[in-house]
Length: 237
Image 1 (cartoon, helix red, strand yellow):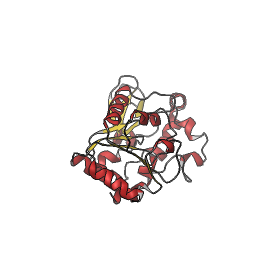
Image 2: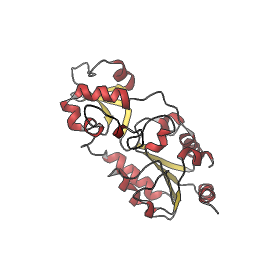
Image 3: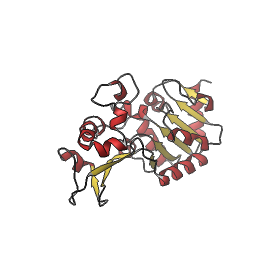
Image 4: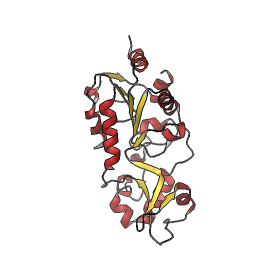
């Protein structure tokens, strides 16, 4: 039995699936990743992207941050692909416990998924750093320069920046979901970003499937590996 057929069998037999996904899940919807051939890390700006997307840079060069953020990160027109759609279907069927995503684009929710742990936040929520008032993505998109609250405070996206800690409630929920999983599918991620990548250590089962076009640093942890595009694999499931 080849690996795809094995994964198909595991999916059929499981009612407690958890999916952990990274940038590769969104690239097939047209959203660029950071580390691919055409990723943001390989493009040239006045500052390296990892510098611009840091908490320190946000507070010290807010206008420059927003120029980059609006151009490269604030993508709201993308549509879900086969992977997003299949995961939402499994949740409706009662087979999927949760989706854990490192992406900030909201595509899982667009596809209909309800139980989504957004490890790195979301572009769809924003808040004033002075008074805490919430603002939607349309407000941030519609502003010129630095978006400001009615109180005068700067508005910050609810996106995890370098130098910031993951949300404790999100981490606790994600860990509980992984620990309860009968089948853990990891897709479209190099598993190099910590601490998010370390969450998979909470899985104690023997059905950990890794779907990624290239090798990852945690291949030795997987029980099944498929070196194929995530959309192609999920379309076959």
